[in-house]
Length: 560
Image (tube, rainbow, N blue to C red):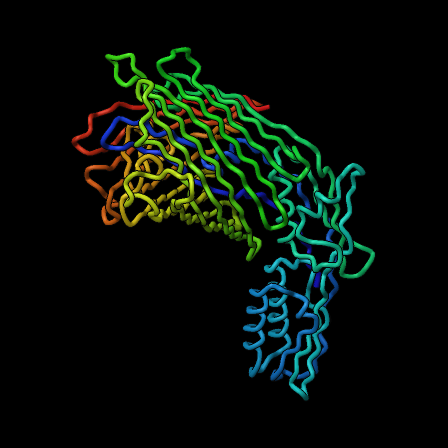
């Protein structure tokens, strides 16, 4: 039986974190700053190239059935030779059920052929795309079905470029010479290479002169790369300025470890000393097979007038440094699961007219853990589910909240998002639903932990920093995008709902802290220039809230 394979490997970059700061109710603090998550950093900074290809797979042998000329034959035992070489637990469970279903029944040759096709499909779905059923013998007198598997192996992993560094190949590829070829291992290696910005690494599976063996060849490994962009926008809070500039830089293989370093530098563009904000954000990640280490941090300083009638200023500084280890699993070619855990260290400082408020000073360490699952649909699109936990801990030198009951409270964040393509009259559309939760058992530190609603990252129609914040959060976002006939131009509309509350039982609807907003916009690109235009309007809010008008936001970005 011959199987022709043509598989395109996609890179799905995993890592996700949600960081926010919120207002205290008893004093005028700095307005929360919207921060990009690690996933948004990757989306913004990495230019993905579908450069990985699998071609010319070794032809599989034709399967031969040796059966007696009987209309029906019974099976009491199924022997599968070489099956012990496959280490996948899920495959072993599936095949055990398949064997049990065959025993004790009468089979014709056509039914047996269907059963063998099912066994081949199991091998394929488990990633063993060059392995298959070989000979099938039926010993009718003994009622034994004897199956021999042809095990597809890796004869060698070679580099086509003389300058390629072989240790980088062994670092990224969780497969080596002599292993059973599993496409999931090659997908993981491709993902590790393609996380590097502007990566042009090519991977090919080629036939070998030896039966049931293949050669994996790579090229363009280890090259140092640079990508970046400069942009101008008005997405920040108005109290900090009207226009803001951002420079994004990403470096691949900077220290020759298949590593990626991403940096964001952002600041207001006006020269008023009475207001402003500066951000420095970085992310550095190093992969090894199915593992990945990530170092993430930011330093944000801001100042603004305490009131319109005084020249006194409020200055704040927020910092974060986090280290995280991730482990990826690929249960199938469509599904990936990521486990992660790490530590975070926040600092926060607030000054009023040159006087530092010690009650608002923080040096807070956290532990965090999470699990993420991504499922790719066969016809395009995906479904992501994320679960994250974090909790502050005390170590020598730490300075947590002076209110002890706010410290050490477990905080859970749940996120579900999907991309669903569909067509109307041959026009392509995308539906993007997203649901976000933050849940706690009691009140938490308002400076570091409370969740916000209102703004581009939660509920359209309301200015960032002028929404609501509290311990528990529920946000439901729905966006429909039309891929217009004009190249790389998209129209979209969205509607959002968000609610925050001190108690979990009111998280879905808190009549005193909820927002509903909608937006429509245009986004696209012309060569190296990309843009986004968003007009959003508030739809509903508590009656006690002062009415606000619509919001217009834009972003223009030049990529290089």
